[in-house]
Length: 398
Image (cartoon, rainbow, N blue to C red; front, side, top):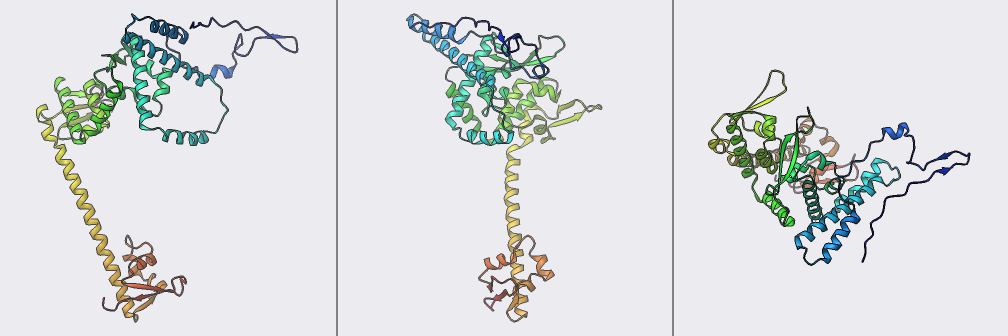
């Protein structure tokens, strides 16, 4: 089988208009209009070989028995990535009929909800592979902004990964996310991704990362983050700006498992960290108040969690007890009023008594339904007739 590589596209000819003027087809040798100038350009494609060339290389390597399996696997994934990029670009450039945004959202929701765990896992595997390929093409270190604007990565992360850096930090054996000086003068530092080791069993790595995060208790993850923040502060004389502390790779990695804002997390432990703002109100500084080795003991994360749980249980029990007491008081008062009236009272009369109105708040929003639920106390006569409905005491011995 011979694979043919398509040649360069032919130059389009001129189109003869009815009036005699010559013009080029739309998009060729055409003076840009104001509307075209305002239109945003599509993201630039990475400099990779065309799909037919990659497919030809794979075919030749497959026919050569001296080519190792690892090289075949690498060529196969390059072909797969190139196919995905072309498919994504075709979707981006294909004109679609304008639709109302609300209708588009309604149509997309069922599709997102139908994604199974296996589909999400497969999408994450492809995302990791294409990120590894892009970083390799950049020499093992790629700026984050290049990865974030790659069409293939954009397509794969949709609905699965909200933050690329946070996703890659779940695989510290393979990727490192850090900051580096921008190659453009005056641009400061940029976030970069380094490929530390080639990806072997991606499925196992993703499943292991998820299981580790799910199985580790929340208190233990918080203790790990506390210890890492304290260690990083101690290495910097015990004081750092919150922004610099948040850029530390080890702190960011520990922060992934806790899933919270760094400043909010530290403010929950005033006995360990002191947060201050400069007079201009721009920079916030964090100071370590205790030795790093005593941070976990001083924070007492597990004890606080147990106390909170106990308070919630006690609070719920007290609230239930209060509702029960108020319910009993309301039943007793209605029984007393009906008893004074010969054992029955009109419903409208009962529901207009100020004491009953005050006592039923928070206990009996609908007094008729409340009385129907306590049919061992009362019975409602002529229930369908609101004006003639009466409340009768069921048993006088109450």
